[in-house]
Structures are given as structure tokens and as C-alpha cells.
Length: 202
Image (cartoon, rainbow, N blue to C red; front, top):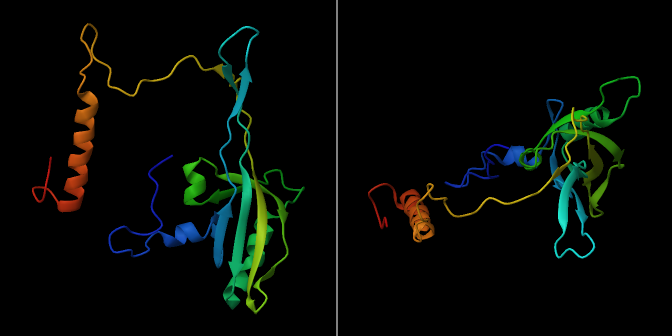
């Protein structure tokens, strides 16, 4: 997961990245009109066990369930309707082709490392608003394709990483380290707002 681009440029609101958030790229083809994602989650398959007489629960990572969710397409211009059958064809399953999953890119899907899907179903186009049949929408239900891992992924959690900075061996942790970290964050924030050497820098 790389850096997440905002939908709009925070300086001036130019909307430089808006197209990437309002469309998806499927097998290299940018979808027409606008699209909205809903319901996509990155699940983690934890098995929780509590032994008889044990005060705690042991959690074991056993599976990596697939993501699934819906993409709603909204069309209104003639060119949108002309291009939409191509998108339908990309997501339509063809049993004669051995490789059938679709490479999909959208910033929010990339953020949860979801990039390959099959289509479970496609809805028919229907009006967004009955008063204006120009705007039509269709919904695709997508289901993540996953390649089976080469080895067993089962692992049991046995600890956590501390938030505080660990002191070198033989040296006590600095009790003011958390405060120093916060001051550093504020220093960078002020520099971003006021510029280097301008305004209050703590």
C-alpha cells in the first residue's frame, strides 16, 4: 500500500485526482460516467479460542477471506452509453477463457490491497430519478480473485509492539519521549502551514 492521493488537491482544490476517485480502471479501460464504491472491506480470518479455565482468548490467523462489494455506475451522456457495453463485456464471465479475473484499480481498493475481481452479477440499467430518465445507473457485484498461497499462513499472535520508543539495553526509557515526539509533530505541522522560518515553530 503506497501513499493515498486525496480526491482533491488540498492547495486550491483543483480536483487533480478526482477522476481516479470517480471512475475505475478495468483491464486498462477507464469506465465511463461516474462510479461509486460501497461495501468493500479487507477481512482477516481470525480463529478465537478460549481454553477451559483460561482467563484469555487465543487468536490464530487462519484465512484471508476475499473482499467483496458493489460498484454503481452512473451514465448520462451519449458517449457514456456508447462505452458502457465494453465495460459490461470486460466483467462478463466467459467459461472458454482460462484467465477470467479482471484487474481493477481505484484508490480506495488499492489502499486495502484489492486489485483483481470477478463479477458475481450485473444489474440492468435503471433511472436514477424517475423525473429525469437521462441519468441511468447499473450496479456490479464484485468478488475478489485470490491466488492460493504456496504455504500455510496459519499463525498465532504472541505479543504486540510497544508504542513508546525502546531505550538501548541497560538504559531506562526517557519519560519525556512521548512529549518530544508530539512536539516534533507540531513543529512539522507549523512548518507546513506557515513555511520554514515563518510563524510559530515550537
